[in-house]
Image (cartoon, rainbow, N blue to C red; front, top):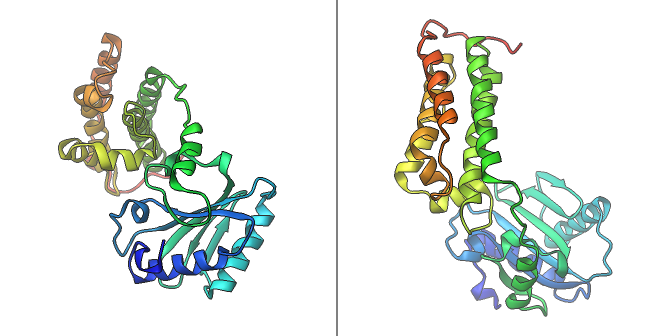
Length: 280
């Protein structure tokens, strides 16, 4: 790929150009890739710079190796991140310009499945077809039954009811978040696309469903949290078929549970509770 073909705004292109140039003669590196919105071509000036570097099989990756490699890369490219966190095979960074990005190092056989739909090869001898095939070979199998995900959502909803009765804002908020997260997991697991739940929901959910999920986001007080809870109960009751792409329906006992939770909340008056109760 020529410098003129690099994706992104000028700042993205400058970073990508520097990284590709740095690794151009490095015999350990088989490919320098970018993925996400830069790879797909639907980037904007706020897009993350998500880099993927395929290295030879004999490179021994570790937390320490990644730390040294990323430090060497940025120093050679003339960048000084203001925030940098690295793990066993990847690092996240923030540059002074506020650009956020990540860089992952791995052998070809360990290519991650979630990058293949958007991966764009910037440099190195490997082609896209080879990288895509390696990533698809690592496609995770979804072994968790959809019924388990729904069951976990109902557990969190029941826990949320008790915490609202105790007027415990932050523990209740946690239960609300977890219940909503299980529904997003259910949405993702019901569709062929393999990616992070928020990304799949953003791409595939219709505007009506997004709006109804949005109604489960509370403000900083107990009445708002209760309203979000009631909206979440309605979401499970009325939108489960849509969320699960027609693969899940509530059993009679589950419908009764939702009705009982709503009745208990209807009897609970939190309008006078403007102060947040401490967790307990």
